[in-house]
Length: 289
Image (cartoon, rainbow, N blue to C red; front, side, top):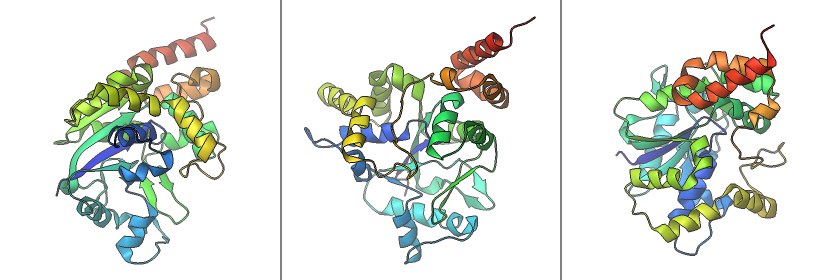
């Protein structure tokens, strides 16, 4: 039952934007999709209601294993929940914990993987999780990095570079890879490519409408007017900046050096232009005497 099309990413990499675009494009003509109704087109493997259904009562975990052992069952439930393909958001890394597949091959049809440079991710990840940037960088470098809800539903994230490597090299996985930076620079090209991967006919008028309806400015406007249920309680807003390259105004040279060193290979292979900018940033701050 290979029905799940994963919308996978390390947190704060453009997953919500991609979900909003798909929600808009697949909606009836003229219908405006609310950011609070994204579940109408996508679901989430770490949602509370799936865990409640899996055990037949409200789920409240005590340990990592309590939610981990439910992942295979929940993914099978999602795959069987409706005919045809199902878009499923995940922040989980690709791999196994013990004898449990975090992403079940038997229910997986394909994956859309969204990646964003770790310098910008560190700032958004810190803000989203109420951490300092130093703490966020430390977690991004931790192979045991986890996210969890109040009821202890866990996402196994791992390191930022291992997350990318797992999803982009998994054998036999049909996938479309998107870089957030390319989405910002040329959203039309990025999302046209996505629709082509999904074998969806491209309607120029509908594409223009969806690109406009899910621009960062429009998503911010919706959040200001109606709020956003996915916004963390401590955060003033979910959609804060949306730009690429803001790290140069916010990170210290020490933070840039750590990220550049820790993720050198993945930066060089997937973000060569940003790796070069980081090297220049470090050199400017540490001129040769």
